[in-house]
Length: 381
Ligand SMILES: NC(=O)c1ccc[n+]([C@@H]2O[C@H](COP(=O)([O-])OP(=O)(O)OC[C@H]3O[C@@H](n4cnc5c(N)ncnc54)[C@H](OP(=O)(O)O)[C@@H]3O)[C@@H](O)[C@H]2O)c1
Image (cartoon, rainbow, N blue to C red; front, side, top):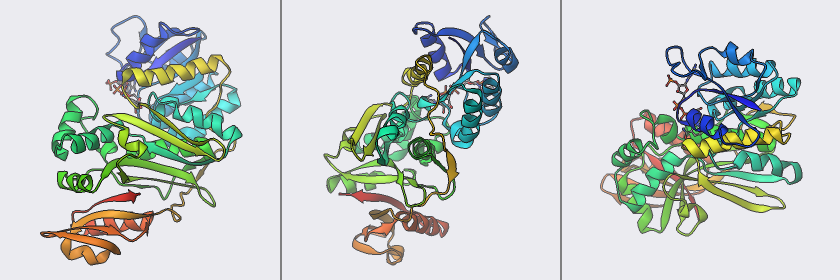
């Protein structure tokens, strides 16, 4: 099967090179921007790919929602299989692309969009057919894991680890999507859609690591905790719950052994129990390998990742409750239900009584709206 590649950046170069060596797959044309055509295999218009009868599949590795969506729709309408690593595209337009692919009887697969090289979505899609998936999630963002790990083990400041992560290519020049938890949130949206047939839209909550300080980390560490950014999802009464937030885990928990920029995806099957997958969540070769796995899957007859009755749905986080570590100005300590609190000059570090996830996220937003510096993390014993 000849595969066209849209985009020739970090992942695109890897996909193109791997296609040259993969069984049953063949390098096709590569779409680049006008002005960047410096080799005969590169083309500058999507029509050259869509109208090429020798192209059997299109791998989109450009990023962004447009023009990726228009190109994807055109490729599927033309009867070509479509594979993507683009989580923003699938989170925004997954149901539309899935519908076109089913109508045309071609594949729409996106393993690389969640977990990079870790075969999370692929395994969820298999597991949901025979087991009931009770919960899912884990460490789905390598950049923030690298930063939290370095802060804990190397005792570095947030600003210094962010610069290190950027120098090593783990964080982008604009790291907002990673450090705010948005990237992990998009991934948990896709995982919920694959596992439960509900692509969560409204009501999503994400707290990142932008407010964590070296003093917070030293405080957790002295009490036997490790901090990780965790995405959580599962089935609620009417739909799904899905949120991202920092979590303090007891040293020895599986998540604490996930170091540097690795990912750890997990799900809990009613029969299978807890299944954990650890690996490289990003980077040229891990991500390209996931794209190639999908393309090879097409040769074996794989066609869809979403279940047939996929719908968009509101998130219901009302049943999720945790105690939280909260650092906030001492004069605001009375605003939250403290189970215990320590004063450190004009700063208060407290552990709250169990609170609804939404209550904690909204309280932090409200306090920040008043100019307060706040960091919080759920406490998991
Ligand atoms: N990098 C990773 O580790 C990783 C992991 C998992 C998923 N992903 C996803 O994979 C996708 C690609 O990531 P990447 O890291 O490879 O990004 P990248 O290095 O920025 O590469 C994207 C490439 O696509 C090109 N491009 C963008 N829009 C285009 C258009 N309209 N026409 C032609 N070419 C276009 C860009 O060209 P210009 O440079 O000229 O803009 C660039 O060469 C993203 O959706 C990302 O979220 C990446």
